[in-house]
Image (cartoon, rainbow, N blue to C red):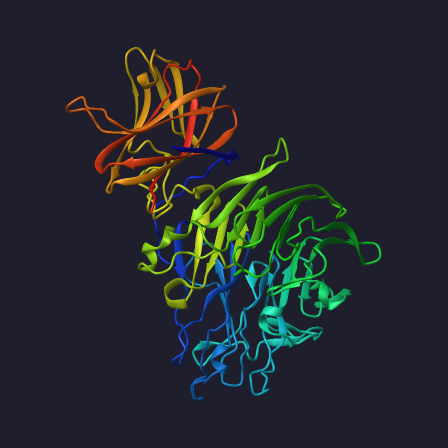
Length: 602
């Protein structure tokens, strides 16, 4: 038997229940919303909806960089005009988009609109790429386009000949005409992957990582124009602007000194710039240097409120064996200064980050079960720790057995609401996974034989549910006495009389062991005071009093959450086995359980 206790875990506060009902045109949390039809004209059929994604409040902005649409009467677009791209603004979990921004027609060469997107409560922005292989260029190439929300309504392109068409709905930045979109041309025309954009309610940042340049614009309401207030132009080897994030009038800038498969001579830096409101100038108020020999510090970051999260590690995601990867956290003051660095080594690269309050969502690339990890900051101590994760194969059944959710696509996070890009969904049509962070639990693995693994009646392929005792029994024997509380999507065993043996107070569930083999049991637990308890996997002896044990382990618990993992060898096949948590004979000390997972090992 192998036993490991994998660190402190903090529970979510105030976990939310979700209605299981569906209404027309909308979808509940825990589902994949496929790219809205149509999918484009011609033979090219892979719009890759959700290649880029951003979230603010109830809205999710989604890029489909290879969407393509013909103008009626024109020839069907041919390569590369078929990669015009499109941008969808989705409200809540509605399946019908709130807005669609698209430049149809054969003149719009290789735009790949929506290859970068950004969103705030006042503005949305998206980028376009450059010229095609023959050098021809659309008038909308190499640009950032911005739409504004006014009185709850977003700028909208007209319908022309029965389809949404933004070709005549663009004005140049500074023009006084009224159009749905404002265009800012890129100073450095670039491949669609070479720029980054970030938005707040008053500022727009554009990063050109190949040129190591960052430009920062302020929206001037009286003139309805974007005014450039800052330009950083640094040596190209720094890759300044490889990552950007705005929070109000504070801008976080990553300079990882690395790109592709190369690592630069420096470890990388992150700076936080703060605006001086009296004179409109920007200055670096916070600075931190990479702390790890693997370099690449600042290649990905997220910034919200008082929290800043930064990744480091080899930029080449295909490296084997992968060098060390790290996730670092900082506190950011209102003046932009940094403090309280904490770093966690991660087993796989984290490709995208999104912060909401004291919770971080991180897309996980590479081997392993998880496609998304959640980290939580404990308010009383200020310490960040791993919380839980979303299993890659969770939505496999919804995708007809195709590849599971891959952690290489972007994340949007607002309040408790997560939007996860999944461009590979349904033959590269793409989709958005709408989730609640409070419902995600790593035990919800389709392979998990514990059906109600987080005490909420949630199945292992859908996250709608509520706190529940379904499938579980709390039993008292031989003078033991206890009662169960399932609030907060956990099982709290309140021990009143412990009895004289461990099984005199027992919580159990039936598990179907369809195959014999080695199994791994994991769960989270804490206790009101330090105590031990016994977990047993065994035979149901109700009919013949044969209670043979297939694996028994003893765990010690205290007031802090701990993740436990136990390997149980040579477990037989049994379609009606019992998994039970025995907390008797340990004093009147309550035990709380969550995230119970039993997997057969390959």
